[in-house]
Image 1 (cartoon, rainbow, N blue to C red):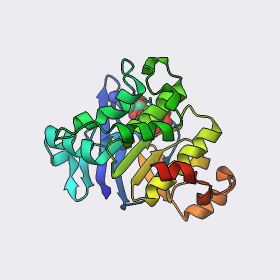
Image 2 (image 1 turned 45 degrees about the horizontal axis):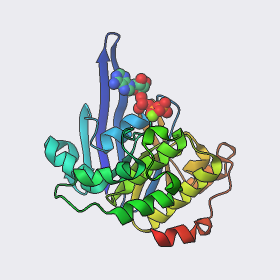
Image 3 (image 1 turned 90 degrees about the horizontal axis):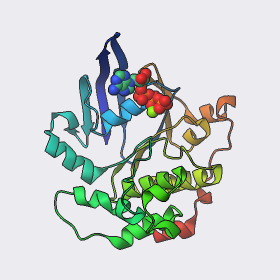
Image 4 (image 1 turned 135 degrees about the vertical axis):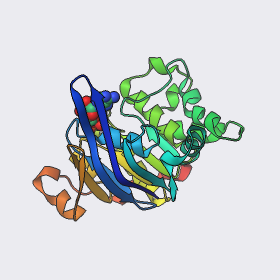
Length: 251
Ligand SMILES: Nc1ncnc2c1ncn2[C@@H]1O[C@H](COP(=O)(O)OP(=O)(O)OP(=O)(O)O)[C@@H](O)[C@H]1O
Ligand SMILES: [Mg+2]
């Protein structure tokens, strides 16, 4: 589905050059749910930006469904992004002057061919995120956690085959957090590939694979189940049957 080949990213400033990603090679198969963990500043958001076609790598390639993302021109890359990739930004990026519903519908306007706004899908997604009572509220009237849920609904609007989520549950309580993780498990069962960045080791254990970033390098923690049993990850492994089946059937 998506792979990075020798991806590097460096920034040059007044204090010289810093290398944020150093030859990162990862391969994510279709339908995989991969968690990326690592301390603050390790390069997780940078990696996600490069994989999502938002941040140009200094060198290396990103292949999405066999096509080199960074060899495409800007328009073609934007098209691929709109059609295939849902991106949840670390700082839940909602447009504050639009309502919840308008924010969720917005990604449809980026599709190459105009489509009739799919109000029923947007409404379903808003309900799934538990913010239906705010559907017509302007996004600047929402709490941080509500804005994050709008951002997740919006990232899923075009039914992306790849969901890149950067700390998607950052401002949420643990109950909502586990609801969203179960929702991600449901998406994965339906074939969506997910790469999720998180600081939270317990959330990482919902994924099939865990990659740890440290100073721009990445290692796979394996086997994942052993890692999740260790004290650092001390959480019960999620039970997929906990997923909210009523909500699932509406999606
Ligand atoms: N535009 C930029 N110019 C210079 N340095 C940058 C730039 N963007 C990011 N960095 C640096 O790259 C490093 C990695 O940043 P990144 O946002 O990828 O970290 P992160 O692992 O996502 O951290 P966090 O967990 O805090 O979100 C940081 O040291 C950051 O200061
Ligand atoms: Mg980050």
